[in-house]
Image (cartoon, rainbow, N blue to C red; front, top):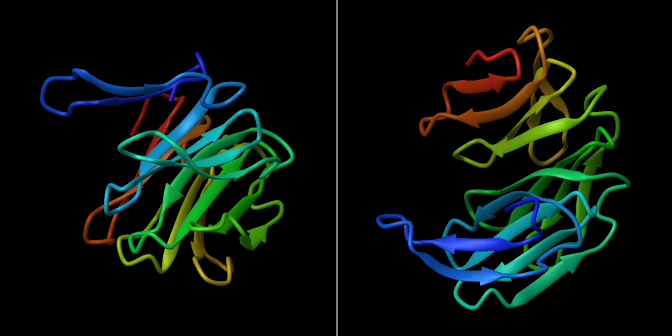
Length: 179
């Protein structure tokens, strides 16, 4: 994803450009992720939309306009490929059906500022979110009930979160220049 509104697919070994979708969104493409089987690409944008693309042809498969009331900042796909989670500058987290982009659940006021990063745990049972409000939160992926919270995880905005492959650790990156 890029501020030039394009999505580009690169060869992992050579970084040769394999395919490109011009005007994929009408504003910054803020987040992209492959589905677990590699067949689809999910994108989120500051234009408030979430789109699903065929990874081979970059043909549009599904689109959700006004997925959030403000910018979509982060998207992630569940390990089984059936759900998409999105985080937004509207401070909400939403879970979508990956095939239809039908809203399955949402958490209003998930954070008190921009939800900058969302990720599923490897087993798909949990969602981890990071926010400009300096917190990291863990949610039940089905109910979006809060499981754990770390306030002031960093001295400045949490920009990115990731879950270890075994699901036992969370790593966070921040605008305070720390991990």
